[in-house]
Length: 266
Image (cartoon, rainbow, N blue to C red):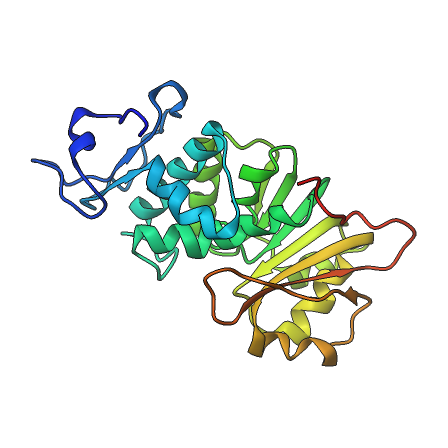
């Protein structure tokens, strides 16, 4: 097991309180631990989360993170749990479930596709999948659309804490962005937990370059709407999401000469 940040952490497990301490402690490798910047919401969650536990939780998704990626994920998780005490970033409060439902489901796509160029994440919320994908694709340029100011503040702080470059956080709604003349064009667009697909999918397609790709995290019930949506997209068979009863990742290409979405080398 990796050396813990503090001596106390070595004797604690998930969910066990630290002696005389009420703050969240993330156990990570000392040599690679990112320096966390002060934030306005100090944690009161009595839990220790170790890198070994993170790896166990991500195993069903076929993810093997490097030490640096592990540190970024743990730093992101720590910040998310802290801020979520004051801001409604996610309804999920359990650290284990945050790892599987947010990080695992977001990063799962990296086993199947290589993301390059510029990505537009629509309705980013706490940054899943768009910001989390920077863990797997550090050279990817990401634009996060989030209309809520407090959530935008979190996204900017998460990008800073994790050391993510090429991240832009914008207050625009997709409707406004897609109707610009001409609209900004992206290689990829992502949406997760976004409703009104009949409106959002065509607007997202308008923001894709020819050959660009749309990735949607949906339930099977939500995906049943896709055949009736008029959009200039060619859909692929969905990827079932591990540990989910009905979660799927749907991908589609905006037709052109050369598609940017291709199987990863792994």
